[in-house]
Length: 185
Image 1 (cartoon, rainbow, N blue to C red):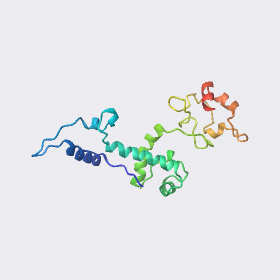
Image 2: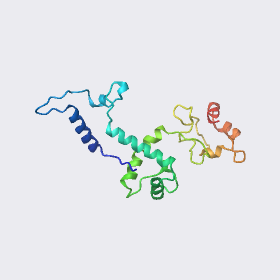
Image 3: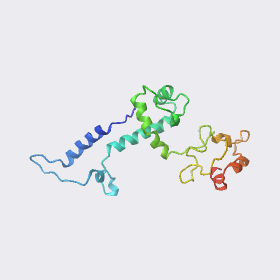
């Protein structure tokens, strides 16, 4: 299933048609004028009517597509897009190329929104950038707050002892503040 970024003008047109249906007057009938549209889009539990804001819904589906490209690497969609646009397998670092499809442009348009809410699970740590990525679950912004200084260590796998496959505690102590050592471990 492909998801495309629907232009705001189309979303506005559809939203306008829906609102016209709900409270548009015609010659024979005077309709009830409900609340403002944004209030009607609130969930019922919050006092709204549960209508969907189409623009927000479309953007949410694009963010979900980013997640699926990252989590289901064997899907046809992921294989085709990876082969064409990010052959190194690093979707979160991929760039827009000239001649990119509308699908790819739509996905990249919401990738930054995805980046604000995701957090890495360490695994082997080869793709996690220590100083830029979200990977510290108990940090307020999910990132390392220790200043980098002159450290040349850049990815999480460099913090792992390759023989024992455990954290290199001595290296952690040399680089990070004590509270972040605890959070990392």
